Image (tube, rainbow, N blue to C red; front, side, top):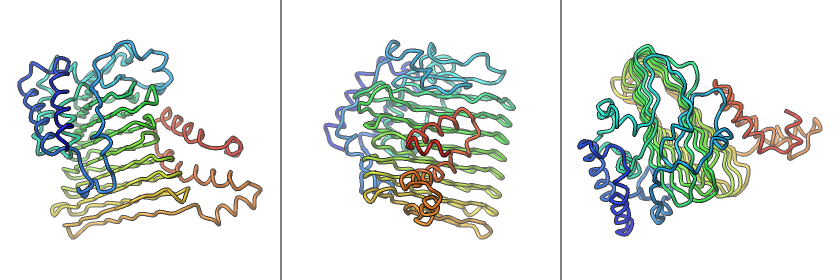
Length: 439
């Protein structure tokens, strides 16, 4: 990292110190200072690093995105109504800061906490100290360290043993931009036997360039179930860097679905640890990009204990001169006998200039397992196009229908009706009017 970039973030840390949450907590102060030192030493990832060889973040390093101060006037309730999903409980964050006045939580059942992380640090910091106090060696990249140093707020979601929420919870992150940075940290702690569905939703109030850097930690207790959806609709000029790290205990279940439909440069890292017997996870993803958008998904599933199951399906639709990267790694450790893992990445290229780099990986260190993986990259099947043409459908409509069907396989897995309806609306919005009449 250049000296000027390192100096910028040191100066930025001094500038924003007055409004960073938890300033009076010695342990959090130390976490921030260690994270900043780690970042200054390691810098941003480069193309020389294996996990970043296809994704350059040089533009983020060269840019100077200032951390946004709390702002209570930039977004109105009417705007929130246009972005939010009906029928959900809602926590709203504007430029990385929780806005209770725009949020809608209602009366929560016993044993459920939904609030902002900054508020939790103020009221009961001991409940989050173990989750936020990670050593610098645990950072997956310089972005995670930067997040630890500058985190302003995020969602804190906690369910006691046996607690459940019937309504999904929407975490709505609004970026007003331009030239602003938001470093948000979400913590989800699901006690034994609890159940919750979350929608992490990122939107933009403008078309300017800004930097969104988000880390989400999920702890799923014994026999608990967490469903986490991520819908990213950032500005086409935005830089969106995100990480999700999940720890699963015995008999627990995690479903993670990532929908990347916006952003100029997008990187999402998802790591899942199946750390006790009979834990299970499902990872699904859909990225639909065009122009010069660049979207990179890296996933890692660690089968650490016996009798665990994982399923993974990521699909991409690429047009224009866009580029996608998928790297999916499944590791079956020596003690993880009777593991069952399946992984697939399928990509549809709609133009000659679109490009995808797909690298599914499977590492097995146990001898009694059932595992498979694969990847495909191709264009629309000419025979399928011809079949529709022979039924009176014009060429453009035939191609649009087949593209819609390809993407719909992931969308139809969503069991939250308002989210599924929103995704289908977004997909339909990309189709010609004559195609919509055929559906």
